[in-house]
Length: 574
View 1 (tube, rainbow, N blue to C red):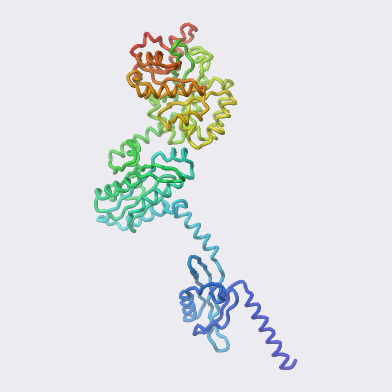
View 2 (view 1 turned 45 degrees about the vertical axis):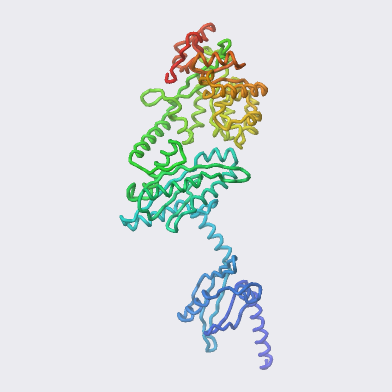
């Protein structure tokens, strides 16, 4: 082959190589020691904004990496973030110095890792920041607090506040979860409004926040700040055409006064917050040692409750619903009681709310049903085989389809589901959950009755009552107490009675304790049924056994005391 043929072949090969380089999926550039670009393929031209498709990004980071590679004489690998307005491109580039034909050159090969970096950033944010509010997570605020603790400077004080939104479940149930989420976002903005750069607000769970204030000078300074913050939260939140009101309970612990570790400070702030929850909500309290004793007592009750459920140390008392015209027993209500370690009977006020908080209320409700089934013969002998049997179900349970389906199945398994009446508060009906549309038909099919308990104490409205399909409505005792002396309560009672009658619901007056209250209901209303200590106190199974067997004639004396003998009523403590 002659020289011309060889040169032609070399040029053809060179052109072929250039075409390969141009079409490489990675960006490739070659530059000399002075930074002059000798070769740029199509991908690199697009990456560096040299093809006119985008503004030229800032290449200072890239030039510095090139200079390092040339000085060091060995490859340098760097991540290059090229910003174009809001858009970001991340390149992983290897700069390799080479010597060719007596010249120092630098070959740079870049791979676009933008998608990978965005995914890594997303993982980082999900691990360290709350997706809904954008606030730091618990681990971030814990790390920040620990960094302050590690300094071990006794003169540097800080405060840790535990914030919990009051009645957030009711807001979720009533307005829906979308409004609840939007509320948390707006609430977090208000909480963060006056924070300094050295402070930090974190969302640690559904409706719980931690606030770290650092540095602080005194407890009074923190109290003033929290008072201003809580006052800001009293203004309504306008969300999805709804005017939502929310308050927050706050507990605060101070370093070093109330602990020397993050977990101790958090726990003590939590304890202080629970003091507020139990004393009215919507305000702030600082931790003190007396609260710690209260928390230990609460923990003891919690342990006792769990053990009582494990050992089935619950019993039922039964209170009759009486026809106030004939004294006949219409039905009975099963009232759960706890028998403590020493055999003393505890009223539900000491454990029901805690059972709900701990997620034990479902198991407790099933235990009540099991107790009724076990004692059904004794119940029939005492109150009559036609008496309905009412069981209380919390609004939280009523909105839980899984529990309600399992409970409906348990009622069906008794073989006499039509004997039962489920008592739920009105919250269950007006909240935006599945009860009215999905759960109620299941119980209707079984023949189980539905009773609205404590009517008048929740989200009461006559329009809401008109939409409810229930068999029975129980008017709360707060309306019945001294009804003969209270004209306004009398007017409300007549309105509820009229609407209930129009909708075909039986009315039960709760909490009758005096002859005067009974006399008013008999003379001024059409109400037929009532429940209360005036007629009979709750009767325990042990008492039923002592009274059994009883004849049908004496049954009334056990379950509903003759009214003329009960003119003074019974003590509610009995």
